[in-house]
Structure formats: structure tokens, C-alpha cells
Amino acid sequence: MRPCWRLLAACALSTTALVGAPARAGLFDDDEARKAILDLRARITQTDEQSKARSAELAASNAQLLEQVKVLQRSLLDLNTQLELLRGDMARLRGSDEQLQRDLAELQKRQRDLGQSVDERVRKLEPVRVTVDGREFNADPDERKAYDDAVALMRSGDFDKAAPALAAFQRRYPASGYADSARYWLGNAQYARRDYKEAIATFRAFVSAAPEHPRAAEALLALANSQAEMKDPKAARKTLDELIKAYPKSEAAQAGKERLASLK
Image 1 (tube, rainbow, N blue to C red):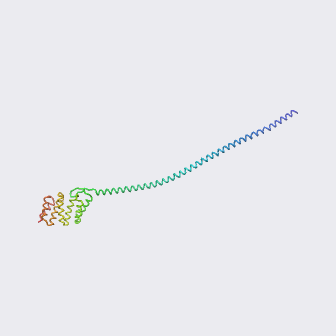
Image 2: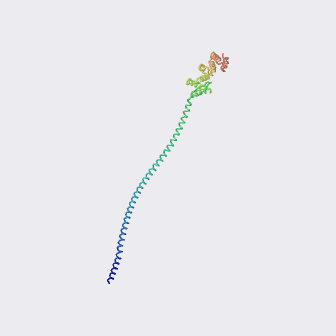
Image 3: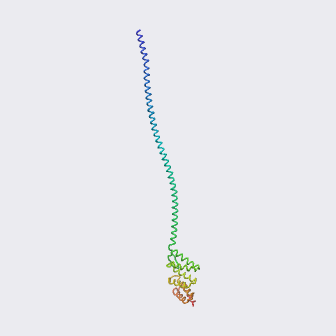
């Protein structure tokens, strides 16, 4: 009996041992799982915190980037505004430049016109080389015009205007190269007006001042004719004799010989 009891006791102990072993194993597994969960939670918390920190950093970085973008936008707006202002300034400058170019062109044209006008006036004032009765000399434009106008009156037969015009020329230009010729034509104008006394004085002054003048012989003949018209044949014959002796080969001397024959 005693061995059976022992066997039963051993079985009981074995059974107890078998029952107690899984309980201890379960307790061990729960602790490990709890520890793993706690570790996992810790890691999740740490990751979450890291994520939040990273998110905060990203948010701060985004805010900074956003602020930089806003600054850049404002800068771009400022640059666009400045660009528009510069474009406006350039447009105004182009307009001003075009106006300046037009003004410059107009000024240059005025200068050219003024220069041409001055040149023309200077040319009108500059002495010109002229030849009258075989004599060459310089004459002012006004001087030349005054002489030509007076002689033109003479040649047109307007002796009443020619005589004062020639006399005025002599007073205005006493040293002119035209002086002798003007005096000759003045004597003829006076003779044509029958101002014989004035003609005699003018012709005599002409011959005395310019005995070598190409018209000196003609002047002596006209002087003799004036004396004859004044009923002074003696003086006329004397003048004709002077003419024939001084200018024997002239046409005026041949005419003087014929005129001398007719005088009584």
C-alpha cells in the first residue's frame, strides 16, 4: 500500500508541478509584453515629440520662407514700380531728345540762313572791281548802283532827273573812281537842259581834272558848243583850237574843225 501511496503522491506532485509551470510562464509573458508596450509607447511619444518639433521647425521655416516670399513680392512690386517710372522717364527723355533734335535742326537752319544772309550782306558791302571809260577801279556796291542809276536816267533822256542825280553822286563820292565820268555826264545833262553856263563850268572842270580821260576831247567839243549857244563865238573858237591841238587824231577834233568853219 505504501508504494502506491508514494506513487500517487509523486503523481500529485507532478501534476501540481505541471499546473504551476504554465502560470509562471504566463506571468513572465505579461511582463515582457507590458515592457514592450511601454517601450513602444515611449518610442511613439518620442517620435511624436520629434515629429511635433520637426513640424514646429518646418512651420517656422515655412513662416520664414513665407515672409521672404512676401519681401520678394514687395521688392518685385517696388522694382516694377521703379521700372514703370524709368519707362516713363525714358519716354519723356525720348520726347525731350526728339524735341531737342528738332530745336537743334531748326537752330542750325536759322544759323545757315543767317550765315547766308550775312554773306549776302557782306558781299553787297564788299567793293567790286569795275571798268568805266577804260579805267578799272574798286567801287562799293552802293556807289556803283548810284552811278548806274544816274547814268541810266541820262541815257533814257530824263535829263531833269539825271542832272541832280549826277550832282548828288559827286557830292556823296568826291573821290570815287566814277568821279570824272560822272562829271562828264553831268555836263551833258546840263547842256541837254540848256543850262549852258553850268555845262561850261562842268566841262572845263572835267578837262582840267582829267586831261587824259578818253572823253576829254568830247568834253572840249561840248564845251565849245555850250559857249557858242551862249553867243560867245570867240571863246568857242578858242576852245576848238585847244581841242584840235590837244587831240588832233580824235573824232571830236575832226568835228571841231567843221564846227570851227561854221563859226563867225
